[in-house]
Image (tube, rainbow, N blue to C red; front, side, top):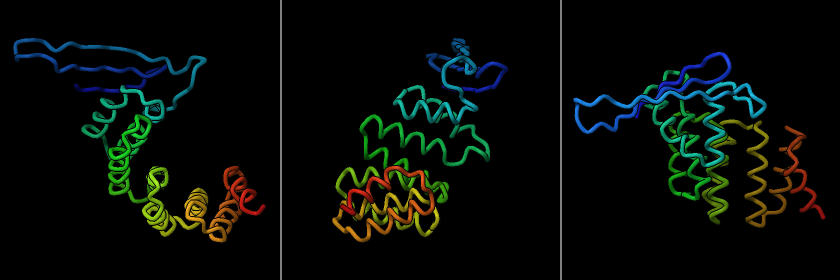
Length: 192
């Protein structure tokens, strides 16, 4: 299947050329659909916002979209399709595939900070805290002032029963971004 995405006033115009023909004499079926992105529903500024939305919902429409973005993308496409696939497979419960796509995201763009966080969160959920810690240490080396990274380092330290390290990183996360409610809650939990 080939998908061409074209923005138009009032939404996104999708043209999908379905390659389900059995021989070359058949004409492929052409489907044209529009999605109104200006209605009262969620507003998507571009196709990447839509892809993330579909990934977070586990919507299968993401799969051909990411395939198309990876095959026909330009220099701005970057690692985003791999990241969306990682989110999608995490939502579907396929942790191994999800981690694989987060690895591809990081290999494609080592500055894609959210991929480290998502991978570490999955590893922590699998009780593989040492591996999660290594991912977060890489993240910290790349972006030492990235507050969510410190929050997650604190969360891993808390899971490893390293209270002082967890408190330190929760405090550091809050000093960098005072809006991280989870870091504040973690700090309150440990300082009781």
